[in-house]
Length: 168
Ligand SMILES: [Zn+2]
Image 1 (cartoon, rainbow, N blue to C red):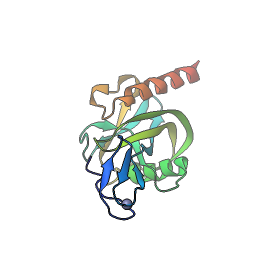
Image 2 (image 1 turned 180 degrees about the vertical axis):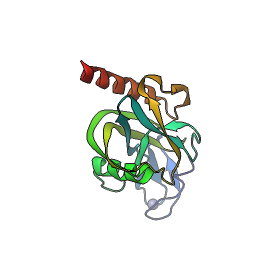
Image 3 (image 1 turned 90 degrees about the vertical axis):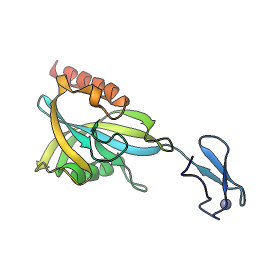
């Protein structure tokens, strides 16, 4: 555990108690490694869904959802709109939560993603600096073997179920 070596309050050395708790050997305060909160979205346009190719490690070159970590005390929908604007240049509408999916970002960081479905409200599609590229895939034929995160398969299944329900 490399992220949790020194105490944020007194710079004393931390001793790992559990995967979550790290106790300062000097001031005895606990530093917690809780899951980080993030948001993600399937932007849907007709039969297609917009996904991103990851530019950075981990899972560089893999297929990811658009989104990212929330900022301090940020409302999830506001955070999602901010990330979508940064990564795609688009504004979104009809934003609806489809589920919460958790995983490991790397060996030190775990996260839970609030996963949404949305449509384009306005804007011109321009990939942001933090994505390698943006790709439209037919929802029925997304290359799931290229997914960066295992939970994306479950989220995609939920997306398909939502769309099927809408068409009935
Ligand atoms: Zn301390």
